[in-house]
Every structure is written in structure tokens, then in C-alpha cells.
Image 1 (tube, rainbow over the protein chains, first blue to last red):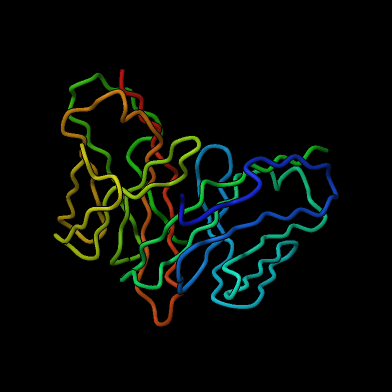
Image 2: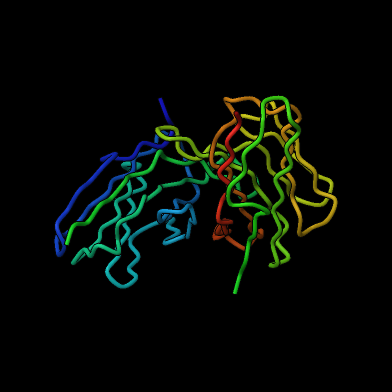
Length: 111
Length: 115
């Protein structure tokens, strides 16, 4: 079983829909990251969370440490949001910057 | 603007060839990482380095080696390429920060095909 599980694996939405991608982890962590990967490969960091909630534009990320769960929400989705969204955690016992990654969620937003 | 570059976007090699993948970062980061990304498996860590001449094995180091002679450059070496090493290879770098923010910055990736 992976230490980081994402759901769904694939998600198709219509433009304007509210989207939620979920991430669950089974170990103690010190931080959780949400990353975005567009076609062509480049990965960018969206959020780093250790507690609570963060918002950037139409993106909102939340984390519940007790339940070992995080969600990434996209409001008013747009075709340009189509990408792979990756959840990654920094394990509590890990030194340095090493991350453990989920398999990713492929999001397609249709016009 | 932060930048991580990789020597090639696409590479085609033959089984048994020695393959070098180069990664350069211009952010003076201490930490550098090599990952491979395969459908259904996500990003898996091959090797990482915390400092010049330092290296540590990740989750899947078999068949790979690395070199870090200069702080800005981290090389991944496939000593004898095999078809099961066909994959997307991604390099990343980060800097130890106070607290736990240490965001990783990724290169554009190299899609390697081994025939």
C-alpha cells in the first residue's frame, strides 16, 4: 500500500465546475505539498501545508492532521487548469527535503 | 527567476549504452534530486544529494549512479541502459530552510527511450 494515496486518479469536469482532489496518507508527516504538472512535464509547487488552509486565487488547499487527509479545491474551473495534480508529503522522521509522492490525479476541464 | 535545467528534453539510446543526464540549478541550492516518473507509479526517487560530493540512495537506485562535483550540477548515470529504464526523468533542487518550507523546484524533464 502506498504511503500517499490520491483520489480520484482521473477527473473530467466542465468549465466552471467546483473540483476537489483528495490526498490521504498513512504516516506522520511534517508537511504536505500540492504540485501541478502540465503536459510536457514541468512541475510547479502550488502549496505547502502543515496545518489549516491556504488559498491562492481559485485554488484552496486544506489539511486535517488528525485525519491524515488533505484536499485541493479549484473553484470556477477553466480548461487551463487541465493538468496532473500531485500530492507529496515530507515524512516526520525524514531528514532534509525528501518527499514521498502520490500517483497524481489527471484533471481534464472541458470548455 | 529560479531555474533548473536538464541537458535534453528527449533522448533515444540503445540497450547497453552508458547514458548521462545532466541537471543544473542556478539558485545555489544545497539539495538536489533525481526522480523517474512512470504511468501509474508517480514520481519515485532514484538518488539525492545534500551537498557537493555527497549522495544518498533513494527508493530505486538499482542500475543508476550519480555524481555531484559542483554545487550547481547533479548528474545521473545509467551505466548500461536497459529497456526498463525507458521513462521520464526529472531533476529537482531545494534549499534547507528554517521550518519546513523547503519547496522543491523541478526541471522540465528528460524523456528517455531505450531501444
